[in-house]
Length: 277
Ligand code: 5RP
Image (cartoon, rainbow, N blue to C red; front, side, top):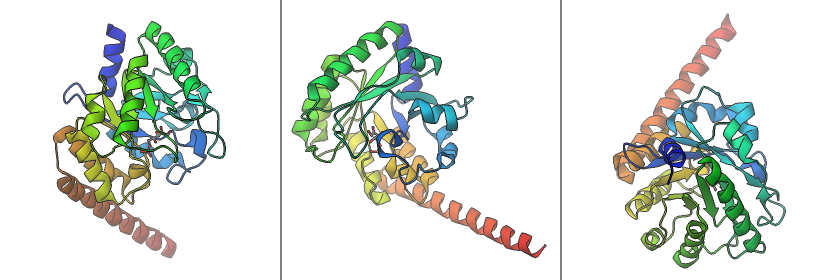
């Protein structure tokens, strides 16, 4: 692997722990203004806590401070909306744009077992061929879509295919026997969070994934749809980078939640006092 790819990967995976907490906020590219991402201002305070932000170029340009110290992994595929055939994706953002935006990686979805499986795999191959020329790591995302059976056999197949085509990182979902998915995939795996779960369950899933060999998370809804997104960020970081248990991380989340409620109460009081003036 050449210097450029290694250097960019070191902006995604902490050189200290070898792991990453990526914050995924790309959902709007096919879901529109998803709960928690309607106003991207809500995301801004979370960005410094992430090792890497997984985002589209549109949101990067409009909503993210260019002086951020957090690295960027750019979502470069798209096409169908949630109303259409999700596997009908193509590459929507050029490598030149990714370089101009100073991305540390680019990411796209593959749809193994879906209608356009072969096209998404050849798109991945083409993206990697181009990325390789510029020292740009590629993240392949597997198993998006309700109809996908998210079990070890399917995820093992999809992750291995992504790695064989040449992806540098694979993002997938957690499942039973996840260690088998990790064992069969020669490149780092990060997990997506999936749909919003109770906070303790999301943290338990994170702990289980890390114990099974995941190198981190690329998590969205379980962070930004939480009643304390900042608390969840801290809690997930504690598991990924410090080896905290889900129980310990849950206490961190709750402390963040209490802090946020106290700050809200102060704001409310100040507003009431202002009304009297
Ligand atoms: C959707 C994606 C999202 O980035 C991914 O699903 C992670 O978000 P979440 O944790 O909400 O599942 O790639 O195609």
